[in-house]
Image 1: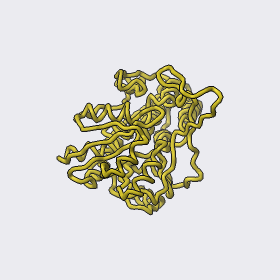
Image 2 (image 1 turned 180 degrees about the horizontal axis):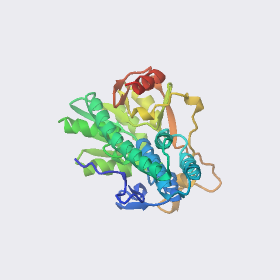
Image 3 (image 1 turned 120 degrees about the horizontal axis):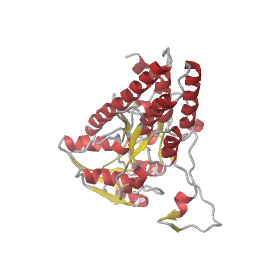
Image 4 (image 1 turned 90 degrees about the vertical axis):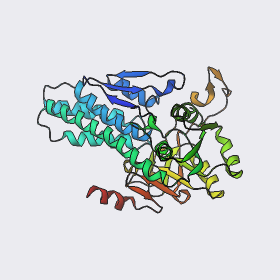
Amino acid sequence: MNETATLWWDSDNTGIHYIEQTLLPNEYSIVECRSIERLATAIKRLEIRGAPALGVAGAYGVALSAVLADKKDLKSFMTAVQRDADILRSTRPTAINLAWGIDRVLAAMKPARTPADAVTIAIAKAEEIAREDTACCHAIGKHGAALLPDNCTVLTHCNAGALACSSWGTALGVIRSAVNAGKQVKVISCETRPLLQGARLTAWELARDGIDVTTITDSTAAHLMRKGAIDAVVVGADRITRDAVFNKIGTYMHAVCAHHHKIPFYVAAPLSTFDPKNAEKDVIIEERGRDEVTIMGGRTFVPEGAHVKNYAFDATPMELVTAVITETGVLRPPIDIQKLLSHRSTT
């Protein structure tokens, strides 16, 4: 089964390489990113996307800034790196992993006595975060695979696969791990309007791995649930607060339908996605541009005089979630995030 990296630090320590996701499935292209401005654009344009992948991108971004910054003295060097970190942090407000990756590398750099030391530390920490993410996805996959029946059809929304992580995936990691364990798993991939990450990315990943996948329009999901054609729903997450799971717009709709039809609704996400400080009401939901909704294939489908709302995420109340699958195990709501993360930091 394929386990290609989504993004990685180049061996010459001069930049980041990543799969350009907006071109898939028609073109597989690797981009060499050697500036903070280019990385910020890549994140905004969703060339790099998915919560865990954004955490790795944020970490690599700080390392890239350290490589590029003027090294005449430590104070001005750190000021420049912090400025670049703030630019990257502002690109996607809802996903928590981006800031988490940035902050971990910045914290690691603090004891450095020289800019050269700081560069070495930054690269090493970013690489460590990428390795951790891959190991984390495999652990999530193992825990989640045990929840799936031996023969089942799983619905997923958007892309929480290898492309959304350093490799393997969270929601798709559960599916891959179940298949590796010998289970017969079929996947229903919602297209995920308006940018079709489910159709373009999830279906591409699974078909490449030889896993049975069928793409549907988002509005078909409830019909299939009512017909008894769905055994479980597994999605990823961009942020988890004590009262809600934030994920790609449309997730809440699937959770409501799954709850009505008594279908388990699982969220697969690393502990880095948990937000111990905020509740749903405190989180900014990213709104994206009009053209993502109004234009497809160069043709306009919404008249100029009509208003458009293009929310990138929605919030699913925790009472609709059957369980959250993490690298440490399966958590059943309610979840005490403060206790969960404080316990982890002491172990």
